[in-house]
Structures are given as structure tokens and as C-alpha cells.
Image 1 (cartoon, one colour):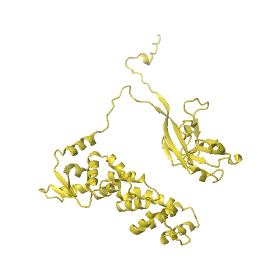
Image 2: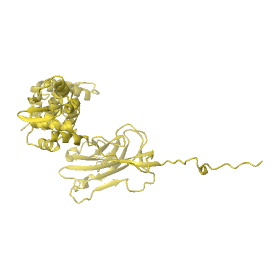
Image 3: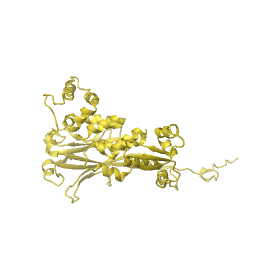
Image 4: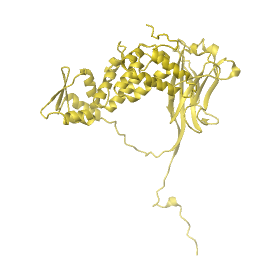
Length: 402
């Protein structure tokens, strides 16, 4: 009896063939590192570096290390060194790198070291663990650098691009339907502008704003309580004390559109007034706290965080404490602790001592947390003396020069 030949599965019309595709590519991200005061960084010692802020690419944190006196003791500070370091936990992270020393003359003659757009014999570079680095011990000869167009106004600019290599199965269909961005904010914004169906009026310093109870109640627990539990059914107008009309208008804009009034915020932040408390963002933070608008509070915190400096941190810290901006407060405390000597010489510190003296102890606790590895504790005692006396460790009064 002859055997029946086995059929090729691909020839069976009832079996549909399947397929898959593995795609290996890079997830790219860039960071610009500005080194201001290059001449002051010189002499810090061979093997000692200045680190950029950490930035995230491909799910890993990275940092740029710049060695003003070089990394290699054998070079006797002849060269500056530049490296890219893996700053988070990771094992065998494969990546491509590019380092660019920016030509600040405008001629575009940048010094570029790049893995991109060229063939690598052994493939992407592999970083074995946290702290692994890629870069150049002899990135640039110091003598040449200091007379070049790369150094301008005692400032260097280094651009870094990291491409993390990832592999994945591509399961996308041949055709897809693009879903447009949400336009609900635009629709509700139009409702506010046209005042169609409005059923409540707010009187703010004589200026009247029409709104919709349901929209406000959906966005704010305070409005829910005021409009549906504490308001007489016949009452159609509410007086709003202690708030500027432009602040209330900006708050309504956010409630309806879930976005800030960008033009007014830019004008507010660029004004000549030195006080953070006078900015529209700070006043919106107060409004967010007053009406329990958690998202508006977070947006204001994010914006105020960008303007933290030695001169503004004390006022910003007091603002964060007053209006329950927890994340902004934590950042301010950390900044003040890390720059304590300079902050204490600022006029803002005097303001903090007068308006929120309890925050001084919180700064001390943050300093102690930063220095917890110091067993002697002498630094913390020194800081406490400064905070208590308002002067330096020698008892002299410290004030900012004007």
C-alpha cells in the first residue's frame, strides 16, 4: 500500500500564513550642556568633573561629564576630557553617541564626534552598568581651546545626542486610522466666550463674568459646594472678593479650556517687577488653592519652578508653603539647601525670616538630609548658627550687596 505524500501546510487553503517582523532601531534624545565660568573651573584637579543635569533617553538617565583638567593623570592637564555616563541602573545598555563642541562664532565649524550615519565595525557601544562612560580623555587640547571660537564670554556649549538601541516585534497593521487630538477644550472655550446657556454671574471688582454652574462644579469641589449647596436658587450673581479680574478670567479660561493664557503669562513673567508674588502665575496658584483646582496648581508649580534662582527661591518657598504647593516647596527647599550661602545673602532670605520663620528649620532639615553621610555633623551646626543669627559662622551680618 503506497503512502500518501504529506501536504505542505502552505498549500492548504484552510491555513492562513502568519508573519512577523523584528525591528531594531534607536530611540534618540539630545541635551545641551552650557558651562559658564570655564576659567573658574580650571584647577579643580585631574580626574574631577563638572556634571550636567541628568536627562532621560530610551528609559535610561544620562549625564555629561566635563573634566577641565582632564581625566588622565598622564596628560598633565594638557587636554580637557568629555564623557557621557549612564546615570541610572542598567545592564549591557547598547547605544550610539554624538558629542558636539559648539562653534560660537556663527561660522558653524563645530567639533563633532559621532556614531550616527557611519558604519561601526563592532556595532553600538555597550555600557555594562550604572556609571559606565563613553567619551574622550583627549577631547581637546586646552591651550588651543582657550584661544578658539568654541570659548566665548568664558562659556562653553556642548551638545550631546544619545541613541539607545532597542529591538521589538512590529505588529502594526498595513493601514491605520489617525485619531485627531482632543478638541473638547476648544468646544468648552467657545461655550465660555459665547456665554450661551450661562446661568451664573461672578462680580470681580466690578467686572462681570458669565459662566455655567455645571462646568464649574465638575472642575472644582469648592464651586460644587458653593453653587449647589450654599447658594439660594434665585441668586444669579456672586461677589468674588480679594481677587483681580484678570486672575479670575485666566482661571475661568483654564477651567473651560484646560490650558493657560500663554500671552498674559509671558507678559507677566517678563515684566520689570522683581517679585514672584506679583506674577500672574503666582496669583493663579493662589486661585487654584482657593478653589481646589489640583491640575491648575500643578501647572503653576511647574511654571514657577523654571524661575527659581538665588534671589527668588525664598519668596517662591513662602508662596509654595502658603498655597500648599508640595512639589514646588520640596524643590525650593532642595535648591536653598544646595546654595545656602548665596541664598542667605539675598534680600529674599530676609523676607523669609520675617514672613515664614518656621521654614528656616525646614531648610536646615533639608541641609541635614543632604549631608547625612557626614559623621561629624559640624557642617549642620554651622548652618544652624547661620540660620539663627542671620550671619556667617563668624557672627558677621550677611546681606546682599546692592
